[in-house]
Image (cartoon, rainbow, N blue to C red; front, side, top):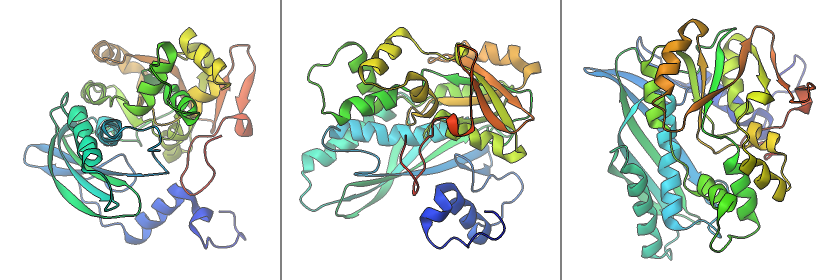
Length: 346
């Protein structure tokens, strides 16, 4: 806040990340050598065999999901995938998870078992195991998951290592989840095919990039990494903030397929805005040291989702996007991502 501005009195004045920083300063415990505390995708603690990574995430009916079009198995899948994505961003291999569930007393048992069945299906590829949790009565369905992973000593990835000159890479195809949300908001299609099926899949049952995250952290070329939960631009800001850096992004390098553009056109969405600010894709954004690019390229060949360059970190602050026609998007002209307690996505 600027000097002379009134002190924040309500949560909206601070926003999500301002509130987290306030809690960290006032109530955060001391961070000992070898640990990572509040402010990253997960907490890191030393253990006799490497390091343990812990992360928790909350999904609330009406805020994170809508039961008018989410099936219970899809809700469970997405809940665990969102948490696995945090482990992926730290380069951690999944170990186990805990589930805290609140639900109305009249919730059908078949629905609740479907949620856990969806989590079990999402857990199967990584081998992560359900090891406990809690249940209570609630007016809405609320899921709070805590996940634990492990990394070799010194191999945990963080958000704060990016430097000017680092190359920016992203996995997969960000933006599809936003298109899926737009499609589903008009009612769930019956027997979807083509781009409709892809958009729905990417929103309802996203795949956490835990294989990519672990390989990226091990290759020694990635200086910073974060998962895309709030939108590429919003999450990029967390990689740039520590050093007050900026970035130049190039639209010509973005992975905007013909099918993606067709979906955006039919949904009356700007494909570039969906790519930059969509959120909830759970892809990984990475800063790569240029002198270690070959090591990263070799690791990226093993990524199931692939990885492609989108720009470079700059010493000059602010994010600038070079459009395909040569024009620039900057400042207020950039699409906004998602932030709790303030405005919704544009």
